[in-house]
Image 1 (spheres, helix red, strand yellow):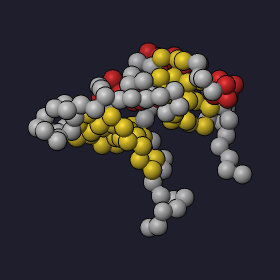
Image 2 (image 1 turned 90 degrees about the vertical axis):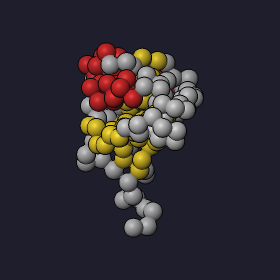
Image 3 (image 1 turned 120 degrees about the vertical axis):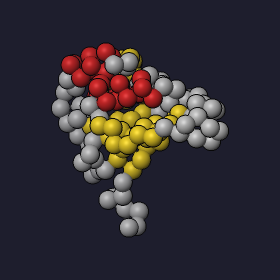
Length: 136
C-alpha cells in the first residue's frame, strides 16, 4: 500500500513508567491495550505498550528500556490532539486527573479557547478539542 490517507499511523515515544501511562491512557482516556511486550532487561531490550481504539487508524506506542531508559523531553507543543466535535466532558477530565494527569493551561490560546489540555505522567500533552476536524 502506498503512503496515503488510509495508512495507519503509530505515534511512538519513550515513557518513564509504562504502568502509569497505561492508567492514564487506558483507565483515564479509555484506550485499549493493543499489544504489550516485556524485553527482559538485557541491554537493547525494551518494554513496549501499544494503546489505541481498535477501530482507529492510529495508535500510541510507549517504550521503556530498563537498562538504559530514555528520559522523555516533551515541550509545551508536543501535543496529541483528539477532536471530539462536542464539549469536553468534565467527567473525562476528572478521570484523566484521577489516573495521573494534570490539567494545564496551554501557552497557545487556541487550545485554551477550543479545548482542555491535560499532561500525561511523562509530561506530554493531550488536548481534548471541542471542534471537529476538517481538512477543508
